Image (tube, rainbow, N blue to C red; front, side, top):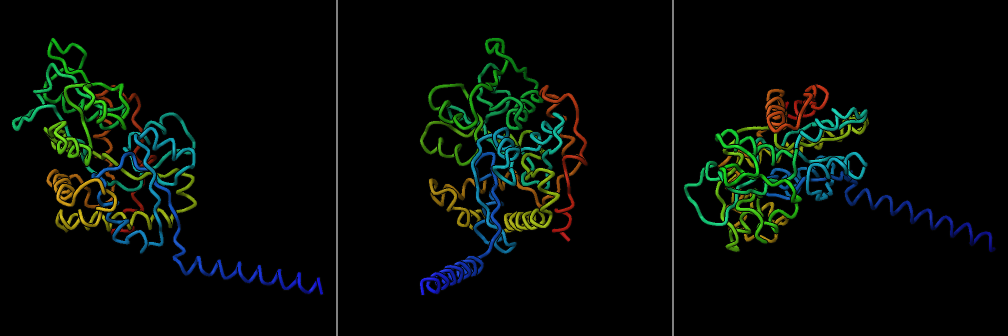
Length: 337
């Protein structure tokens, strides 16, 4: 009798386990993909649209976002296996490849096509120009990061010299303050200007702690600013997932190209609860006006070449990485057919 009870107990446990498995499948059965984003910003609106509008779910994917605060930390999360996909500047993939890593990072979908940061100053100036930075100090971000390099690119193209002699008219670009605390450092009295992504720039303006002067991206032109990357080893084993992920992003890109700022703001608002709908709409419109988002996920060879031009000008690149090694367009091309 005891043996019979034990057998019945085992059968019941197995049955409950099988029911549990069935429930998990019925509740979605989505494949969870961990994504590290270089920062949390309205700049990445197509991604949040894809999440909130169900585009990832349509592809059988559930995205878990991790805030990395910097391309170096995003790449570290990718290399360690903490995440499967990283959203960051392609410069990180170039650095890793040039270091001789066997399992390097490959960019498979471009998201934004120009710098998404804004120059914020301490006093309002409707006629601001890059020349106004002469003799001033600006908090520019991490040395070797795309935000800092594109800022330097814009400054140099304006005929200014970068250095610490502000009395002599040089622009002192500070690179000693971590990306995540630049806004706090600025409001604490550091620097004459700071570069910030949205919604931080608007938040400072709303608090009367700074004024948005100009878009760095509008001044410096198109560049492959942020793209999705995965390790070559992961991509080889999970081509179907990468393609489905890319398709969801492409749907998000198409959506933001064809819808008004207010509608986009309503959809992505759960990701930016600190902003009112009115302010969020203003921010979305700001990025639409500077044409920040890619129409499709293809990262072109000439775009990567221009990024490496910027890196060389900044003194951060000795060897140019081969396009065909650190970029693949096969997934983007497939989803666009």
